[in-house]
Length: 325
Length: 305
Image 1 (tube, rainbow over the protein chains, first blue to last red):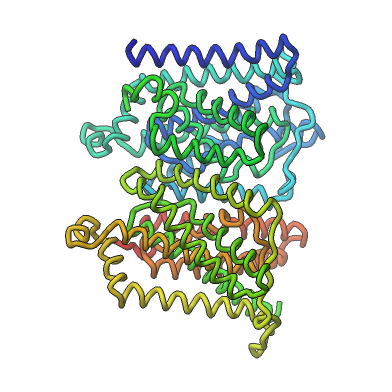
Image 2: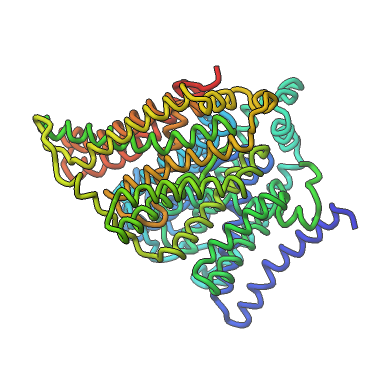
């Protein structure tokens, strides 16, 4: 079987398993497992966002937790004002997911636009560090800004609603997350196959040659970075609704590290890399976390082994090197 | 707001800056000579602090603890370099970030397994307790000693790099790696020595700061991120840049936290001013870094041209 077909088979298997396991849990009345699957789906959406910048564009953003946090705070602040009937900057709060997602994507897109426009002037280690610095600014700002809970975070008392579903039920919330995951994956696949994706990958492989054939690296990279931030912001809004809590920890640098880890464990630039990586990370945490309190030691060892010896991640291990890497 | 208070905060800023310099010097050397981003540098800081606290606690002697902390950090650094880091020199930055992120997980859990989940306490040595009068202000003797230590190490490091054979090799290594290997310098040994030297400085900083903060798992990462800010501002690979950057960041951070809430309090109500001032002050050094990168994308003192 050739590698391309193996990858499609593996993708179908991952998509199927991520649906079948919670379906079984729903029938067996195991809400904990459904919530785990929802967390995998939402983390995967966040990582699909990062995969556009990192996987396709080669932009090592060490600050994507910023967009996760911005999305989360949009959801938290909207629910907060809807709950106590006050307004924010003249706008009423809302407890409807769809408008919240829209605002979360616009705001995180704006933030990503500013960060990207400034950061893309640099490259290499400087790019890594400046994206980290912007995320740290967000982290410390939310930590010390008292209006929305500061250090203590902001609880969401009632989970926001999705038309036609009862999001308080784990299974129905999972369906929302799974649906959004499939849409973002389709978007990623379309983007990668489009002229835009080809230009972006050309810039990653050789910016000088790309410029020589008339592609402007800065503009293309900036658009990709903004798209990337918007999708991660959407995931942040959904993550806030899953945990019904927003705190500065969503913007912590370790969260940015985790998003990169997810992509590496799954496979950089691969369509289902984020899904595989999120499943491995959450699965590892639950399985080894139950066996030993020192599970992070083992996670570190596995991660080190993957970086040193298995650079394609899980999908690379099974389906060979990327076709377009 | 008295002059004494301002002077005290200024000295605190300088002291913080010099401790940051100890951290940053190792980071910037490792990047300058080997081209490696080492996120695990903060773990070496933590190892220095833990060993110092454990040995000082067991023997009752801070200075023995300090020696143990430095030695343990240097040994851990050399070991990590030989087992893991060596394989990363030829890799891209992404692999380096991830592998050293993995090292943080491993070392933090490792320290937690050995020393338990609770913070250790490390007392200031008896000979450096109390305050000393500096004219207008009574200042902590220990913090003053930290300033002295920091300056002494900076001079020592400058002498090492400017005046010794090892220093010539380090400078040559950061300019052209292949060439000095071709000239017969044992480049593998040189890399291990540079890494262990950086680790020893981080361990020294951890042990010294451990006496005024609690010694706990995860103490290294906040300092690490600020040290990255320092070397990016100063210019990666430049010791002089690390010194200037460290002092800038130390003083601006400390004075910002002290002054901004007071400045805002002059035109808004006090509790609000505290909130806004504190929020802005905690972002100040990152703003400074962003500004430096926008106007001087290679830092204030670029190491290479």
